[in-house]
Length: 176
Image 1 (tube, rainbow, N blue to C red):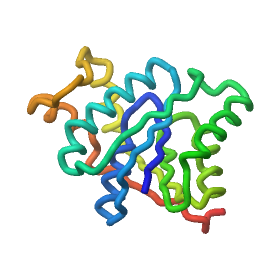
Image 2: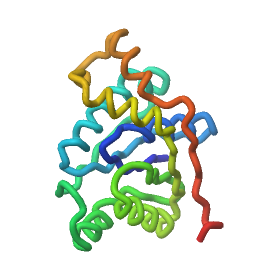
Image 3: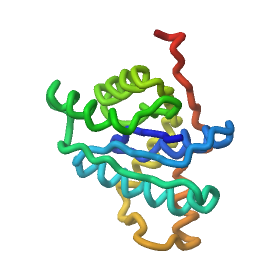
């Protein structure tokens, strides 16, 4: 089972959603992250990888992460949304989860529509504003994401960026 997540300029939400699903008993083994070429999104993805390597991979060694980088920096047209739909449609299958927490609302909308069309489940995680602000401040620091092995110091730093008090909501077809 996959978790397909949209990513914006903050790494928050993706790993909180993953942990929610695993604690609930859903055996997500693949995390697919949809990004753009925007430099701030790239930085968020690098932080997300560091958080994944230091905090998630140790507990869940059977989990893998994959990036799908869209061929543009931002959504600027209907054609971009159509291209997103074409690229993502091969990844979203029945039973998967599509996390619409991060990124542009237009991207989340398209991914939600694709999820319902393909029989996947839509999910979102609300990271408390103070935690979001803290993560944004940390990303502005000179701390570089890790490359290679995660040290104890890296683990302490990156794991504290994951919100322990986030709220995850599964969006059901009752809302439609």
